Amino acid sequence: MTTYIRRAAALCALLFVALLANATRIQVFQASSYDDNAANRRPSIARWGQPRGDIVVGGRAVTGSRDTGEQLRYERTYEDGPLYAPVTGFASQKYGATLLEDVEDRVLAGTEPTLSLLPAWNDMARTHTPGGRIVTTVHPAAQLAAYRALGSRRGAVAALEPATGRVLALVSTPSYDPGELAGNGRSATAAWKRLSGDASRPMLNRAIRQTYPPGSTFKVVTAAAALDAGLVRDVDAPTRSPDPYTLPGTSTALSNEVDGCEDASLRYAFEWSCNTVFARLGVRVGQHRMADTAHGLGFDHTELRIPLPVAPSSFATGTGMDRAQLALSSIGQFDTRATPLQMAMVTAAVANGGSVRAPYLVERATNASGGTVSVTVPRPPHQAMTPVTAARLRELMTGVVAEGTGGRAAVEGATVGGKTGTAQHGVGNSGTPYAWFISWARARDAAAPAVAVAVVVENADADRGEISGGGDAAPVARAVMEAVLGS
Image 1 (cartoon, helix red, strand yellow):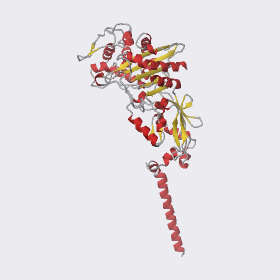
Image 2: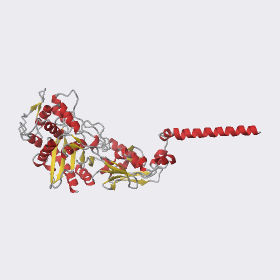
Image 3: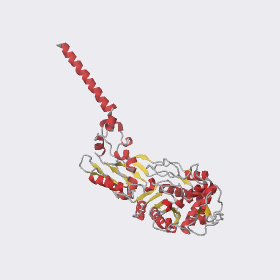
Image 4: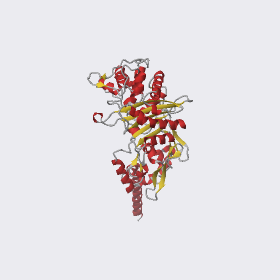
């Protein structure tokens, strides 16, 4: 009898060891595969089982969480949703997350290890740390001014602090309310179908994810390259430019929208945006120098993050580009493309003595108690042009507002520099030109400019030509600059 008991006990011990081994295999070695299984709802239940951390603008949370009492308990809410949608994005129980809700998800969801003193214990106990907060660099008054000034038009605004690279405004219109997508019910499904099918693409962040031909605003880059190369030493001297200008190697004549461009000085050509002068300058500078200057200002950078991923802006640098294409590229046409953020970087570099600061949108991350867990450290600046060239460009840009096409950007009590632009598009350039305006502003009693702005309006109402940028986009830039300087 004792033999049978010993055998039974040994079998039970063996089965117990096998049970422990199998439990260890499942709970330790295969845990991630079960966690990631699409049929496993526990991660989603846990994810939405506590309030999500907030995104903060100007000291005020623009997001929140609502207790629904359902299995996915807490649903995301948004204050002034359409205003801040290009910054926050959405966090949806059904459709995932975008923009800051996506790239800062670990902090907001409380899964970032630095939020907890004992992250290993949280993993073992399957407990959750309260979500942290993301504090942004956005200037509330500038954001609101840009949003209101664009109104119902399709377009975008990006505003930077030149000395630091802090993003002060990031606006894209038309916008949408992220709260409509937060839940997982029929209303969220209907909102997704409506927004996804909308021809105006309200969920597209035009400020950082859409590239446009920059038109004549790119002439700032061409002027910088020509000044740095020493091709222009006196901005008031004649440039020996014909009007019209026959593109090299072709019979195509490039003309201007204004008179007085034949043999015009760089100052006049800049203030009144003579295509012929800048197309010829770009050819004289040469493809490699033009490409170097554009690259130094941020063009053709494929990994720019603020921390939101930014679509790369491009200058036509292919080896097959001929001189005619270079001429068109030098006035912001052909294959030259730029985001509004990129053109804000260009004008910020001019305002900052030729030094480019990498833009950033997040100031710091904190835990739920307000303790700082990470801070954005600005990257070292890059000198894209000489300080002398930057000073000359500030002088020329000031002339655009005081004497040229950018008069509607003038701000009382401040020095403002700007550059208008229109960009042709569509088959045979049949579409209404995009209206551009880039600018910087310095208070009269300040040592340096406080803000650099880029505005693009897709459906501008003005006539074709440079006046479109001055008429449609310049007032939007003025509203943003007044908001920043007024604070």
